[in-house]
Length: 145
Ligand SMILES: Cc1cc2nc3c(=O)[nH]c(=O)nc-3n(C[C@H](O)[C@H](O)[C@H](O)COP(=O)(O)O)c2cc1C
Image 1: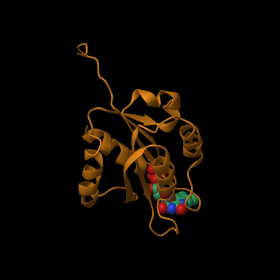
Image 2: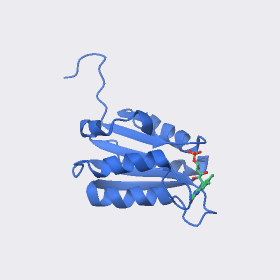
Image 3: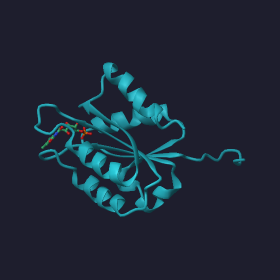
């Protein structure tokens, strides 16, 4: 049994946001998962990933369907970790008028599919809207257990 006041986090949500769209999405996902701890990518120590049952990555897309630099560094670190039993998901925000909508989500998806137990991906157009909530809730519900 856990000591009073202690909290065991099952899910780490590691996100990166420049303008706030991905941050807002990360926060609503975290609010749906009481056992999740939200990190900005620069605060997260990749070596601690084994302390969690699940990892959810959230990123915007830069350049031409690319990972932002900080996410690129996290990607490279995560790729070297033994995460084959880790349940994972990836979400992101982007803009559909770019050639590769949420390309950074696709890059993480491919790596996490090969290296871990990827269960879901979620792509949202810029700042999430009320009409996106059903998809967001469905995504989050996959990390409740
Ligand atoms: C220079 C630049 C390049 C971008 N390239 C893409 C892209 O290739 N694909 C895409 O889906 N969105 C692209 N975007 C849109 C951002 O990913 C989108 O606005 C996102 O919601 C920003 O997230 P943030 O507010 O969390 O920083 C680009 C934006 C900028 C400014």
